[in-house]
Image 1 (cartoon, rainbow, N blue to C red):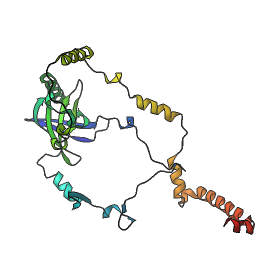
Image 2 (image 1 turned 30 degrees about the horizontal axis):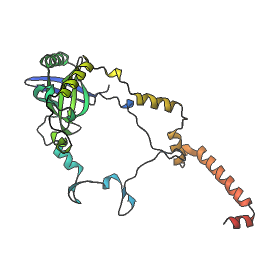
Image 3 (image 1 turned 90 degrees about the horizontal axis):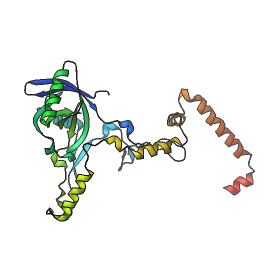
Image 4 (image 1 turned 180 degrees about the horizontal axis):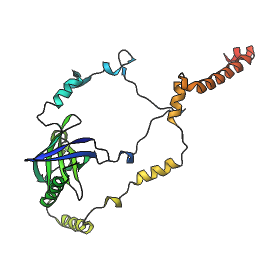
Length: 275
């Protein structure tokens, strides 16, 4: 795994040089390219001005935030960058704010998981921190600058590695108060029966390998039976005018010339009738 971020974990007077790597294998996600059904050419999106009906270059595009009903405020990119770096967070530092019980963290706050690995010289301190967290049954709440934005995160110890989970801010989570949720049920006979069922279905641990991605397997089987085509070759044909596409251009010209000759040989009356 290639690190995407390097810095250090700091808590108290301890500083551990570490790196972050994404814990998600993006190649395992199901993703598709949009192509034209007729000729399998890739579909591209262009940025158009709805008033002038013209394509707009990136240097003429700015962000706008809706501050009211159909009222927007324009914001430049450099202004957003200044806001992101205005915090007191030290660049390259995962600053541990406190250690808390894992149960106190709302799983709905989890945003993106990363693996934390020690860099040279930090191996011993890394191992000590991981073992201390495991024994204390605690996780670390920390903040850092990630992708130029101040980010709240949780340091979660695992059997081998420490994981860092970026967290959504509590303001982003909706309250379930508007949902039709019943009031707390007293310990009736049904609750006791449900508890017995929960105990019966409980296990010592959960093995995610017991629940493979069946959709991914079915999709792989489906795609294996389909024909193949090259988007790269079709893009080269579409460009056509380049020197490296002389053969494709010549072939297109020959076909066009043949079609023109065919049309010129048709009887005049037939051409007129067709018109």
